[in-house]
Length: 224
Length: 98
Image (tube, rainbow over all chains, first blue to last red; front, side, top):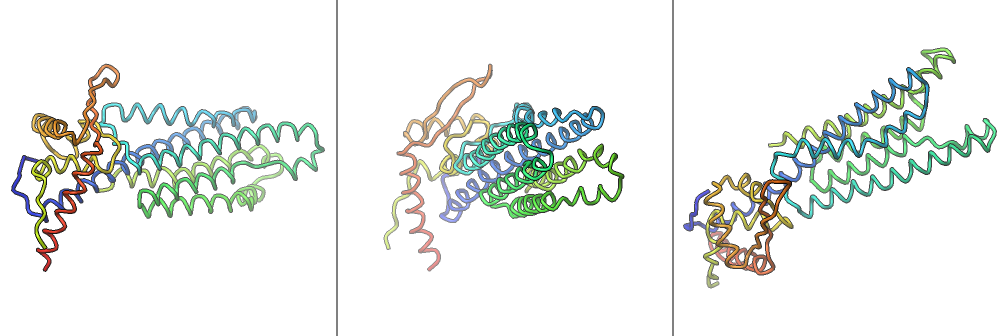
């Protein structure tokens, strides 16, 4: 772009429109990259945790999910290290705030669930515990779906909105109705059912992360 | 309808592009502006200096790790000038339409 001062009104307007669009696109691609990395990290972590659970049966491995934010932030920074930083804009800030809110709510909720289930399993009888135990996955899936949908609205990305809605509500319904357990119970006997009961949440996390994070992230990254 | 005068400082392709980029952002780094406008570093630097001298943008020279980093921000004066430029542009576009 040279220093051309002989501009028509139409050309001036074209430049303004084009640059504002470019700015929005740069923010979208930056967010897309982060979503893509987040999706891959969650998928990797879900596979790792399930493998550990299958090998040891120790539910403490679920706590490894808490490392995901650190992993995502670290890899995201490393990948974007040599690239020009996307501008600080209202759109970018709104997306950041949406995911910060999701992070605060999810972490608080997880801590509450861990403490609640930890005490209830000791205080109540197994019959009562089975009824009152909180299964956090469906709520996390729903909250993540909401965050993705809001991000899609902010970035005006229809793909992201639909991926968020389908992933969030679909995941919530799937988990609420115990669809995975339904199929698992028909495939295996009781002993094997308990042994493999860690697999369905992992499959849900992988599926949801792919639909809700990796796929839209890839689309945002590659948008023209 | 009389034509409103167009700010000569903004009525240049690259300076207008820089201002248009900055108007929708809080701040942007020099390499980002260079990438988005497709300008050469030297030319962009000259235009950024002109906008900075007019008080339309503020330029902060800092470090990102060990590397120098130039951050540009639009000022209130720049925002007003840009809005006035767009308003003036409208009068030309309305004449062109009719």
